[in-house]
Amino acid sequence: GFNASEDVLHFTDQSGISGSYEPTTGILTLSGTASKTKYETALRSVAYLNTNTINPDISLRQISISVNDGELISNEEFRNLSITPVNDCPEIVTNIGAVVDEGDSVNINDQVLKSTDIDGGNSLLNYKIIQETGNGKLIKDNVVVEKDMIFTQKDLNENKISYVHSGNETNTDRFVFT
Image (cartoon, rainbow, N blue to C red):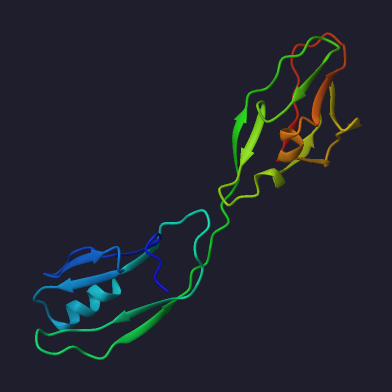
C-alpha cells in the first residue's frame, strides 16, 4: 500500500494538462482541456519515486487510475508496482594514513581507515589485501595479514589491526586493498 513517508508520484505539466500531487494521500490529479490522446501521453509520463534510499518499504504498491469528465467518474483501472531495492556500493570515508617511528608499530583503527555502506552492515565490510606492505607487516590478532587475506571494518573498529615497521631505512610504505 501507499507509504506517505517514501512514495511520490511526479508529473511535469504538458499539453495544457497540469498536475497537482497531494503527498499525504498519494493522489495525483491531472486537469486541463486536452484530447484523449494527450491525456494518454500525460498518464504514461507519470513517474514513481521512492525517496527512501536506505531501506525502502518493498511491499507491492497499487496505483489506481480513474477519469472524471466533470459529470461522471469512470471505473478505476489498477496497475501494480513492485519495489526492488538497490545495493549501493560502500564508500571509503576516511583513509588518512599513519605515522610510525622506524622499527615501531602503529594501530590502524577506524580513525585512520573507515568505510560505510548506506545499505547498513558497516561492521561487516571487508578489506581484501591485493598488495602487501613493502617495509613492514600488517598484523591482525598477532597474525601477519598477507595478500588475498581479509580484515573487516569491525576489526578496525575494535583496534585489531596494526602496522609494524621493519626497522630498515625507509620513509614510506603502503598496502593496497579492495
